Image (cartoon, rainbow, N blue to C red; front, top):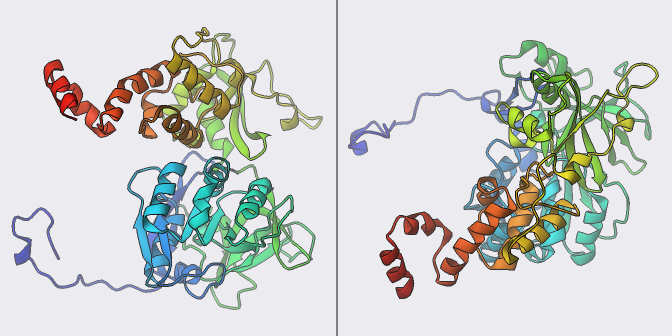
Length: 494
């Protein structure tokens, strides 16, 4: 054991810790959203990992493969990127920045010769739209996390028919993937199958009476086998509801996980994803239960009723929209609600738009009529903020980029990017296009620190002279601390 803060670690005991590990021992705990407002942590045992890394055929792993590890450690896709390389003698390249974007991925693929790449579905769409040439040097691309966009799949395979493109599906309670589908180069469908069970995963499609359904009939998907987690940490009631005895496993004590996904077997033996049994949705790869967001909105003193839904008014672009009925407060607007939710929810769970209604539309049986909910016009109008048109050439160019990325006709220089429907993936598009337009090396963090056109334009105007002088962005803060005379002298020497 080595005490890290000791002055002389070489004198410490260097023997291994006395630990007894078994396949049932916990490897990690991964958290996902919960409808009660409390995230639930899946306890993943060691036995769950080998079956998705070793002896599988959805992708080729080996000493010749180089994988890029860019996923967050809080997402189990990172396990594929790491162990897919290390358990087969391959090479794992660690992404140098906190968040991946198409430009950064392109650089890593080029410099390190990345041959096997994982991209969540939303980032895959962005790469196909903005930087498809990235895929030219990749032999295998695994994507998933949410339903794939068939047009983007067709485009990728049309450009690179030799690319091995894999659609992976699976809840984090069962580690990385439960099923995979190698998409054929001539794919021209409108729905991408999620494939067949992989490794030691077992898939059951059951009806409400827990009976297997025949081919072509929708059923709820259950996962069995060693992949199934031990349960939710400290949540025995929730564990009992989701992790059920497995009557098909053939082993005493075996359990299966109830996914909540509606799926059907196709005639060719592959699986087709149809949606959720409940209202859980996936937004940019994150599992979100709208009820959790609704619960937080109802804590606002001026909100009487609310509904949160995922809309896909633009194909391949799924956004959360919050509909609220106020408690007699006319001035309540989207920015107020966004600031309120930011105190308790992560960015990906905050709706991209809010719509204030006189009442929530209902069906004849008294349930929320989601089809009658109006499109979020608030995203177009930008709320009640006074519109100020671009005043400089830089602001005009930034505004043009915003209009293209956000899909709106008009933006003001004081509009907030995230209040206008922006999110982290759209922010990467803005950063990428601004790099091309202005030749400045902005970071993704720049959009969060300077979320208006006016602030971004000011940042660009400040960085451009330094960039042309060969000064990196991370030196700006240091330069600004210098006197004017010292800064001019250094720039002259550069």
